[in-house]
Amino acid sequence: MSKKILVAICGVLLSTGLAAADLKVGVVDLRKLVDQSAQSQKSQAELKKEFQPRENKLVNEQKELKKLEEKLNRQTPDQAHRSTTSQVNHLDIQEIKEYLPHRYPFLLIDRVLEVEPGKRLLALKNVTYNEPFFTGHFPAVPIMPGVLIIEALAQATGLLAGRSMEGLVGKGRTYYLVGLDKVRFKRPVVPGDQLHLEATYVRHKRNIWAFECRAEVAGEFVASAEIMCAAAEDNA
Image 1 (tube, rainbow, N blue to C red):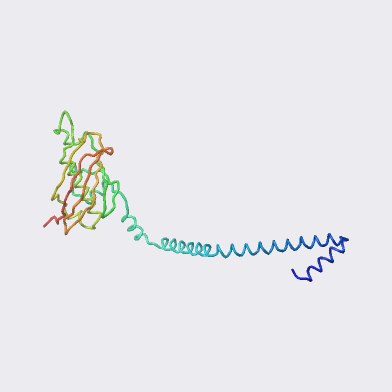
Image 2: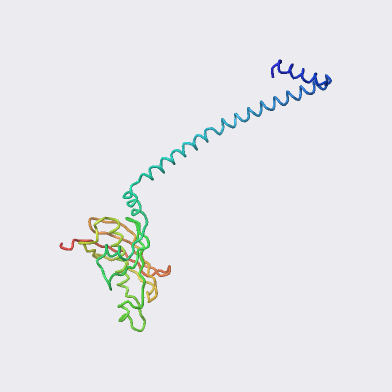
C-alpha cells in the first residue's frame, strides 16, 4: 500500500476523533486486509493458470463435436441407407423371398432376427403342428426331421452370403448345398418350438462359402454342422 493512501486513511481516522493507539491498530488491521486480498488474487491467478489448459481442451473437443454433427446432418439419404444396412438389421418373410428361391413347404425360415454382413446371421423358424412333414414323421410322435433342420441352417447361410455380397444369391441364381461336416444332433424339435438358426461366416473361395452353424430351442442345443454352399447361374 502506498504512503499517500495510508496518510489519507490516517487523516480520516483522526478526523473521527480516534486515539493514536486505536489509529495504530486500525492501520495494522487494514494492512492485513490488503495482504489477504493480494494473496487471494494470487491464488485465483494460480488456479486460472492451472485450469486454463483443461478449459482449452474442452473447448476444442466441443468444436470437433460440432463439426461431426454438421457432417452427419449433411449426409444424404442414400448414404444414410448404406450406413444402416451395413450394420445389424433384420429381414421379414418378403425380404427373405428376394434372396431364397425356396417356397412352401420348403422355405424353412420365417424371419431373420439379426444379420451382420460378412460375420453372422440369426434366423427364426416357428415349428407348428401344421407342418406337412409331421403327417408321416411321425404320426404318433411328431418330430421335425434332422435333415430339414440342416436344410434350415443351409438356408440361413444363403441369406448371410446374400447379405454379405451383393448379387451372390437371388433372382437368376440358385444357392446349392455342396458339403457337410461335423453334423451333430442332440434335442428333438417338436410342434410349438421356436427354432433359432445361427450361421457364422468362416471363409469363402470363389463361389464356395463355408459356415459354422448351430440350431437351438429356448437356449438348448439342438444341432450343429459345418456347411459349405455355392451359388450358380440358373442357366449354367
